[in-house]
Length: 295
Image (spheres, rainbow, N blue to C red):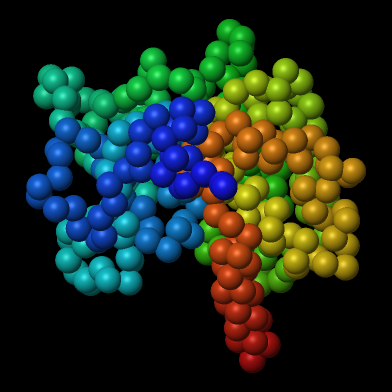
């Protein structure tokens, strides 16, 4: 008899706490104000939301979730406009907050106006500096590998991609409405393969442990693995990130994320069916745009 979901959730190797309380659109006043609040998209499409969600999970932070439906936001309502800016974290007030009003985005703040996942990960690390994993481990005095690999993402993956479709189908469509060439994807996968080889002590992007780089890259590589072979089905063998005969190091990254980061594989990671539906939406938008350009 397979174990129940409740039994799996209580397994120490998976997690030592239950799933966070979830509310829809509005945070009730009765909620414990000592907990941070994550505002993320209800449809689980936003890549930035996924990164911040994953960051809180791997740090094993006790927090509250508010799922926001952007379609319900009221125009010209400042409160709705603020909440619909996703992702967001509302931090509980601390003594440090009261003593200093000159903190930057990497330090403690009571409220968060940034929706940049990179800045939010910096905030999380600042709030929980002694909690593993370390998002920015000092591999050496001269190399900040995690931040460097985050910065490499837009340069390694196909350039001039449509930013409006990055959460639905990243790096598949160009901002001029055309489809990215297969050769560009092959080059990108080869470069990710080379990145993996730089840190031979482990299969994560920076070696033996998950870092901020993996957390930022994960949503995009996750969608990429499902969607790329579908779009380029005629060249599926070469354009499948999980074909270990061609991209062994890249496939190792997927495997280590799924096997050694239960917060990712059991809570945050989207399934293939979801990303296929998102690809359908992106394709429809792309095709409609192509028709408009022809006219």
